[in-house]
Amino acid sequence: MKQEQSEEDLVAASRNGDRAAFSRLVRMHQERVYWVVRRMVGDHDDALDLAQEVFIRAYEKLDRFRGDARFFTWLYRIAMNMTLNHLRRAKLRSFLPLADHGDAVEEHDPGPAEQLESEQLRELITDAIETLPEKQRAVFVLRYFEELPYEEISTILHTSTGGLKANYHHAVRKIEHHVKAHL
Amino acid sequence: MSKHICNNIRQQLPDYLDGKLGEREAERMRTHLTDCASCCAEAARLRPLMQDLLPAAREGSADVDWGRFLADVNEGIDARGTQKKSAFGVHPGFALVAATVVFALIAVWMLLRPFSGNNASDPLLAEDLFDAREIETLTSLTGDAATDLPGSVTDASLPPSSLTVISEEITDVADDELLEIADAQIVDALGEDEAVTAGMDYLSDAQLLESLSEDDVTLIASLLESENFMTE
Ligand SMILES: [Zn+2]
View 1: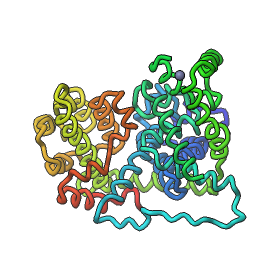
View 2: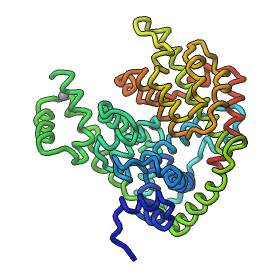
View 3: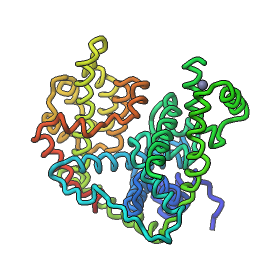
View 4: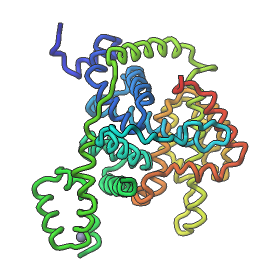
């Protein structure tokens, strides 16, 4: 077993159709990809589907990865593009008169009294994050949860670094506003 | 206190409260906060969130069978591999791509309206959005399919319904690439500051839909309904 194969080697091997190498890349990054998507979309099942799709897409497009960014940054980009796309279409669907939006208005059960306070808090934060405009949400998730430097965020979101801090600040303010109103 | 300094300071507040500033910047922040009542108030307002509430949300747990996850990914790759060969025509990703193309292009097209009306000094022209560089990008992505685009797309009066014709010509562009292009164009068009103050929520879907004709909405709906890419 060549455990010492670098990520670069694994990427190169995967590009040549080495599925075992790609499987190792998936295992290395699956949890982080899942969580970044999960924090964007909120829903566990959607996040799982999207995260799998991210890896499938990554494999298909591996020859487009030029190695000028870290592999994970590239994965994040795919994840973010797919997630933003997903959110936009979900939002569009909810506006369409033809679509059934049975799940558009999600009723939150108050939950059993013994439910952990921290769990409720997490839900409240999740709800607050869901009120953010998509790109702002992306900036918030990448900065707060992933703790990425602004340069990397700008690479992932394909924007300049200029507005990212302002974006992050706006996001935090909106979350604060939401949380305060619902506590 | 200069408004400009306060603005800069405030943008750094979340990072400061989260312990993400370097020592020099943190020191600058502390000095400013002792001198500036309004920034100090803003810090006090955000502190409970940044230091008590949000950290609790950082720890999450999910019940995922990662072995199964990997198996599903591999299955997906296998399935896609065979579908990819079927190339033209009833491409499974086509509906999705078409929908996204329509959506992205309409979004760009929509930008021509609110701004050209209200902001006479800086009217947004279609040429600004689809300049030679963008067309080049599109062409490189789509090959021959995009070569017919410039003439039709640069017409600012293009109604959204015509965009479906264009979308039908583009059969092999990945949706995320198109979205990237659309995003870049939109941010370009808005100007960065404006995009930021708009919360970068440049795809204001509600606004977008309000202005679409019923036919367009029906069309997009049917495209969305027929795509089976993400929902299956
Ligand atoms: Zn100040």
